[in-house]
Length: 350
Image 1 (cartoon, rainbow, N blue to C red):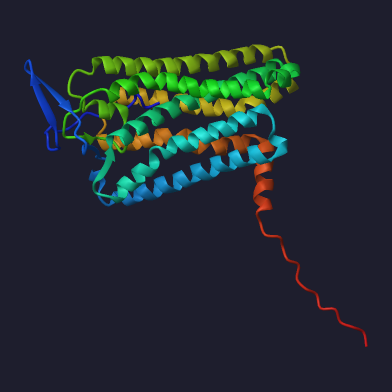
Image 2: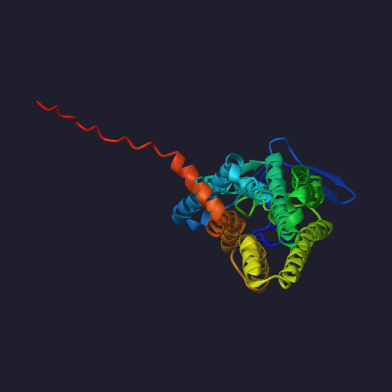
């Protein structure tokens, strides 16, 4: 979650070159929005001709993300053999991954092709809200999937009785609600702030920390609320996932070798995805606090980090899950045109 991982400092003083309305009261300056004020997205303008290379790489990655996750959603909805709760949760995760990457990558692609990229103030805050909300929702769905694996391994006889359709819908609704709960406070505070020119967001999209640096005034409370929301979302989901796997390990310790191997195969894909998601977030957070990187490097790494899990999810689950792999193969083969057998000339005997 990028709410506090990437903190890009401005390199030039704030110079007011856009229309502003100022009111002097008790020596303070209150800057309010004019109707035509927009944010300028700086992006990666300094890369020059290298932007085309990055554009091609991002475009190919985005196509793979859309294609892979769309296939998972399609087979989960159409294949009756994939009716278990695990595939229901997986299709919801794929949907979140598609929308999550769509909030940022298309804007970044268009920014790589244009010299000046602008975005309206409402559009900027909508992008910022959905980017954070979907990131938290994705982790919440991973938590729900960990609980699903716990029930499947520790209570296999009661699995179908526990994971009914109403329960699945409640869990997914809870994941989306948790994402909104963790996102709304910081987004609402940011919307009520006044901002100083130049309205240049030093990122490829409306990154929260980059937008916050344009605030006219002290942002200590904003930083505390933002950090608190991020810690709540990360720690809550992380602890619940860890608890599920601790209970799974305890249950596996009482199983035979064959059952243990089957249980490992059941959770392998999910465990790999969770490890990549939290491992990459921890690595980026630590390295950026220790190292000194240019804004361009930070932007590129932030894009790669946000796209890593959505890119790998379809690959990992299709490689590790035989049922899903066979369902995708059947679906793809059904779209192939039927082979037309060549006509055979029948000669008549004279």
